[in-house]
Image 1 (tube, rainbow, N blue to C red):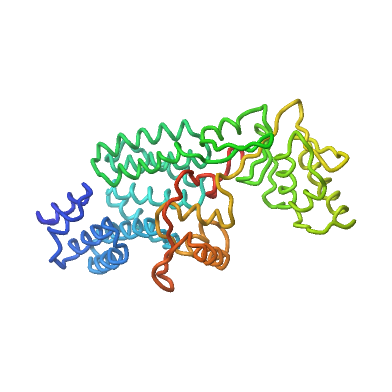
Image 2 (image 1 turned 180 degrees about the horizontal axis):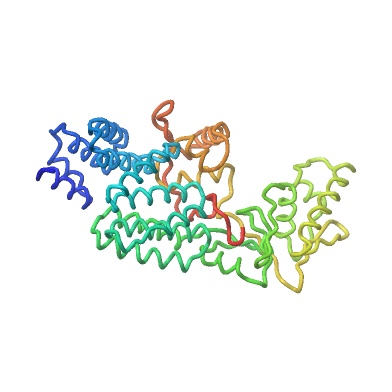
Length: 407
């Protein structure tokens, strides 16, 4: 490796792509093309960066397996940054194996971090933690240690473990300062902002207030509160969890009863909330009795449902209180907006993969949001991407796909 290539690589490692381009901008040999690709990625031109890295990967000979593997890892990082979650992960795994076999521990570890960050985006926290446990951050430079701690913090926030998240973010900030890369420090700052902005609303006794993520953690751990969780569509008390995610009618009834506690809810209100009934007849009342009976059986270990003269009331056991935990902002397609507010551009296919739903459903949601002026798109066909500026004033961590504690 000649002096210009070495200088360009050092500039990229320090987060200075313009300095790197000064060294290799006019060269067409594979190492220079690969470094130009990385520089363009740091400058945000992902399409050009991807083309350059593929060109460099093809140009490296069969005896340069390590160089080709590094190009694949760099391309995988671009795919992750551009939210191309459909990028073939098997290629990254093969590249990581090649790097490990040739003793390139640093780039092999970075490839593993990319795998973990992709799992974090799609909500597969158990597998992300399993892979993360195979890495020792002490063996890597400050930039890689920053990535490690950001992943630890991301998992902790998804699992609503705020103390663990704050500790990881403090370590990430320290590592980012040691690395001296402004973009890395900004990423840590953005991650830390999640813990200091409202994450949910608590509705109790006819009043509601915004709360931070650590308040949510305290609420979920309390043995004195029955929580009707509208973020995950479940009812819980301490370690007892009743999931109603696949029973939307039952959850609508549970939420209406929880919001009215300690009072009752008239039957016509319950019918409107659960069934959307505008005109009530005896068949609606019969169905309500059936659904209330089902809900009563499912909640028997958490709370009771008593009939009143005008409707039904939720009664917690042993003198506990009932609160409803709701999203900070509730609107149609909020789950799609939750991903778009990370400031990155997403394709509809990547959103569908992350949300675990069909691309057609996501596209309908995007079209609806675009008609309301809440999202914008650029590009066409498969290169079309969707983006929106972050919504100020609240965090979307509870909208993302991840289990709550005990799920």
